[in-house]
Length: 410
Image (cartoon, rainbow, N blue to C red):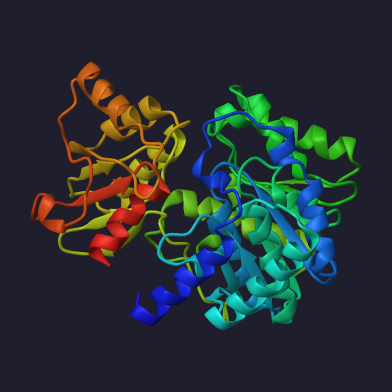
């Protein structure tokens, strides 16, 4: 990032400094006061409810939300529609959260809208959270950019997520649901699925992507039925439909997510064009940022995503061995992640995620001893010279660990 961009990035975060950032503390249960949708509705009212000028596609799930959002945007734009995309978190720049036709929005558009919204907030003496502010800000930007569609990824859960204040989306999409944020969403897959299915609205069609747990599809279908919403389930047997759209060596989980995006287009009656489609992948999903040695960054932060990461690396780099730089934040299944990664990692380097303070480094060390893993510890990684030279590295366990790899090697 250039110096002028760093300054603009800093200016943006100074605007948001007064607002509580719940992304920094996910290891606790829901509080009705903090997660009520009343606050974000009031915030949207201040700026003439920008969601009413957009056809919203709302996505919830544990894994795959970001890539489905990117794929949908590419497919929509190939069909001639302008599309805004709101995802979280970000790796290199906050502008990754606000895309128009899969391009980063300008700092001028970002700051102009942020200052305008903050002025409105201060006049009304409101106290939105960081994510509530970003949610409404994204819709303001998409409206001003003349977008027809807005693809919104939930932050955490679904039912009480800030994005769920929108009452009439065009379609709701549920991607793969697995164990994550259990302190917030519940410790059973049924509880988690019910939270994700909380985005389903009366009469709004629902697309359910491939699920690692069969009970999830049942819960999503039952919720859709209870709200008179048409239910469409993605059939993994139709994975061949993505062959003409994606490179041959695309990870299986990305192929499944693309199939979910294609199904959503079908439900909406949108006919994407292969001739004008441009493939863009979200950062930090099995992303190779250096070839020799291989440096992979992946936001895998639960056991299922760690397993899928191993499968993808085995397909993409079958002859390669990897050292995993692992940092896990509070509230995550550190042991599940570690055991899945241990199926293929040659050794580990345990570290603290950055800039997240809720690290499980001590837990990782205890688990490394318990399972007799080959590991070393570098509490704070700031230079490439701290890492073994010429080794293939995977930075995983959290977005906040993936960002370390991004900063060091990009």
